[in-house]
Figure 1 (cartoon, rainbow, N blue to C red):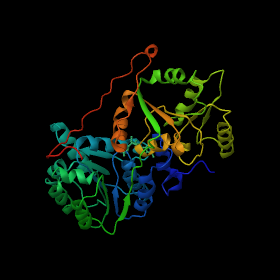
Figure 2: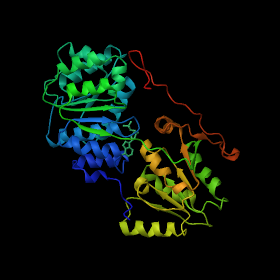
Figure 3: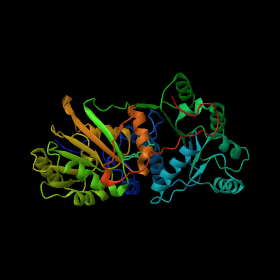
Figure 4: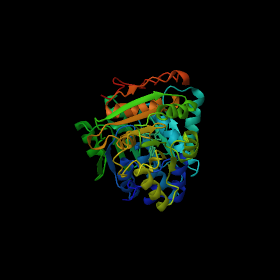
Length: 403
Ligand code: AMP
């Protein structure tokens, strides 16, 4: 069986610079929403997507748009992303800046609550025609009311978390913004849920959209899930402690999100009593297969892997999965831990979360609708960080949280 079943970004028709930027961000394979939305959006189609935070939706709508700007050498303000809160606007802007380092495309986040300097800075960027604007509705309208923003060349409109924007009472603001941008454009609308009012808005502003819905799968009940809150330097000693004299765990997978970490982890877990090996997408197919064969035959006890093998690989007897860091999104989490506890067999999946990954893991728990058991750190390793996740605050309106 080919161990690479999920789509790699190279398989999309994306510009080489974009592929390089994606690899720099450490993304290896496309998430399901990306797999469906990117090809449709590259073709110029409108898209209506049901996808929650944590599914990789931001890259699903930014990558095709950045690709189009690059391919067609578009200058000036061509892309408007509307989003409900300042936090999300900043997150999206940060992700675009991450990609843009390679692309020379500028973006600007516009949100309420700033001072006069910030206002001037936003005004200048709008006047200069910054390529991508990421904005909350109210603040953007204040700028648009002054007629210096160049909106006549906008050809991509993206509505992110549309249901939340409507819950927050932004419908009129959104309609007013849309009345100020060209009718001939591509519109991508993303929403976590699809209530009738979202369908109604979609009918008004989308043109024969491709409808995409990603159902989040849930982990099997037979997998025991635990999470350790650890500082980065505690992770390897913790894994060594948990596995070194637990012989019943014969087959152990350690997942990490980045290729860069694989070798360090292997070195840290080396042990004279059992084999620890790595597998990554950098390896030739034949080498990957050789390692997988040895792993299946229990000649390798611990395999350190990137997400390359989280889908599609069939190893019936994995006893224990570690997530060395938080997977990029909930789908990946479910796929990774789905390597254990297969066909009703008992399995254990332990995730190691440092202070930077807590928000990400919180989003994953929301999506799988389960609070994962917090395991106690062994005394000799010392205490890990405390669980701390920012409460998401809304900038305006009644209902800050999605149900
Ligand atoms: P989002 O659903 O856009 O909020 O993304 C959730 C998280 O997944 C973000 O931290 C992204 O950086 C990460 N992410 C998005 N796409 C991928 C991918 N294809 N592979 C790995 N991580 C990803």
